[in-house]
Amino acid sequence: CTEQTMSRFLPAVRVKQLAGSERYSLEPAIAARLERVLDEGLMRLYDFQHEDGGWGWWKEDPTDPHMTAHVMHGLALARRAGVPVRNAAFDRGVQALADRLDKGTMEELPSLYRAYTLAGRGSEAVEKRIEEGWQRLRPSRRVEYVEALLNRGEKDRAGRLLADARSGLRHEGSAAYLKDDDAWSWWYSPVWSGSAVETTALLLEDQLAVDPEDPVV
Image (tube, rainbow, N blue to C red; front, side, top):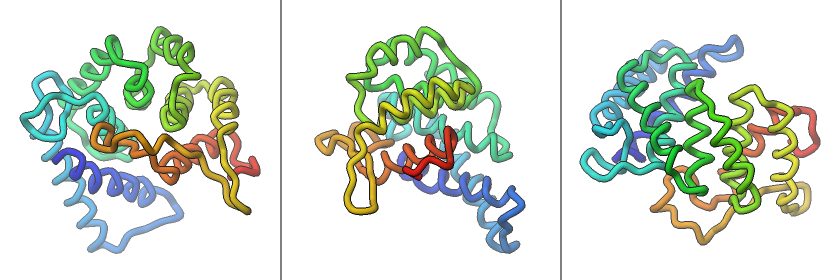
């Protein structure tokens, strides 16, 4: 399914990013395998893209906003890592995000907007709507929106909202984590599963972008 494809493709994209830095290098056999994994993932994602430009769990099921956001986030990261993503598929995906942003629920907006901004787009109207509903957002959605602002270069705004999101941190000894809602159904939202590990990981990504010297890191 799409989610399983992304579970292989997205880590490969992250490895591609690391391999492009001066600190890391890959053995030739691993580098060749990485390219195959990326190519296979792209081909499957292209094949599973729906007529409306979005993605569902499968090739012939209804388009799901969270899955569309998840795939487009991965494709945007892939482009930044130098992976050749087809323009037509990417542009159709961006349009699917835009269409859903116009009518999406408050629960959907942060993940949709996170992918939208990573693709180089933005919307003041969407930002206003999300910030007006900030107090109703779950922790995972808050840190997703903070990342969206960072994608837009809005570091000061992102920092203020990140500080508010951090007010929910729980502490156990020397450890700190941001708990999400365990009652949330994983089957409805493939990107987040109510996991403190996933939510805290994105919180740390945001914090590193805002202030890597902060003690919470």
